[in-house]
Image 1 (tube, rainbow, N blue to C red):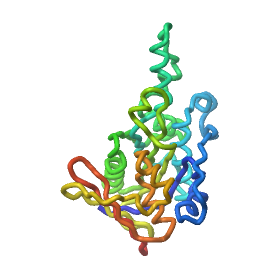
Image 2: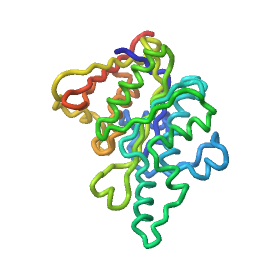
Image 3: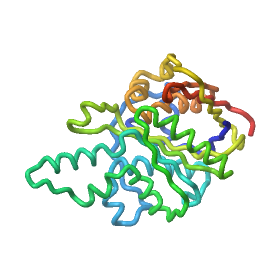
Image 4: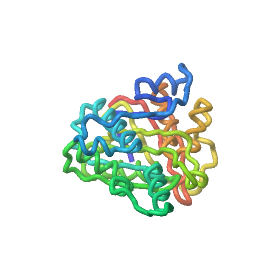
Length: 265
């Protein structure tokens, strides 16, 4: 299946937007890994702006940057939001509340605890009536969600917003689900060969045992191995370097190959 990339958004620890991320991915600028503290999106109404967690802000910042780069009106795009952990900070707060003597859970925390909260905030922010899907498949979230987004772009014959994000989980839960750093990436995907950045997705039998992250700078490779959203970093590195690249990621008992080509649209 062939899809094209029309816009990119990228934010994470030490990666403050796609323009700043590119020299880091190329190895021209060291990756300092500074933790993100993100402001609430100005596009949100006041009530939602106050309630937006860091995970919601991360997803929206990536999505808005990708839409701006592609010249798309955000409210016109079907969307696929994808996260392995969901909002671990909120879940940890709820678990702590339930374990307290009072056992009371804040309505705002409960409101933000659902996996599709970022998608909901996105639709409110941009007054979107387009369909939005929220997906999570543990460490295989990237291939599952990218396949879903590509299939939807082809089926509907229109651009689709793909937004991938994950952040660490604090507290006891984080000791058994270790996630390194906050990272998010959004792509505007179009069907076919519409732009010079083209992805070919294919499913293949068995597992590919090669390390897809060996080309990354050490700190980014660490994020790619220990943050499910970071698995997309080798593709972003190839885009930043202007190189063709192919990576294989586990997908069930098999693997998905994602091949990037720089071509004439």
